[in-house]
Image (cartoon, rainbow, N blue to C red; front, side):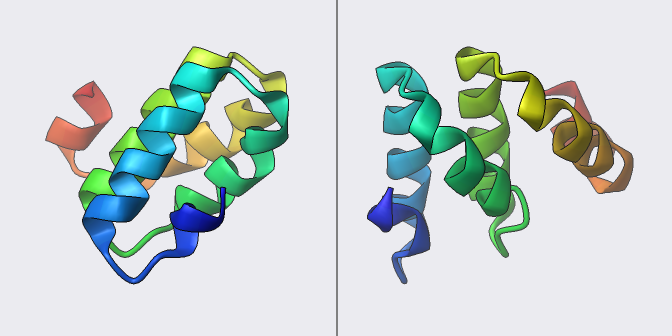
Length: 76
């Protein structure tokens, strides 16, 4: 979870992906925070990870992100 705030966007991207695969509910809040990352790829991977976790706490933040992202990002 600490790697979600790394300076390198590739590290943040990989951290989000790994957290989604691990399925640990403790990752939900840090991943929600990552939805507002400066890098679009990191945001999308965080959204994907939250979808894999399936926690209802992520629904509101994901809906907000959906409304402000580009069309191609919304499809993902």
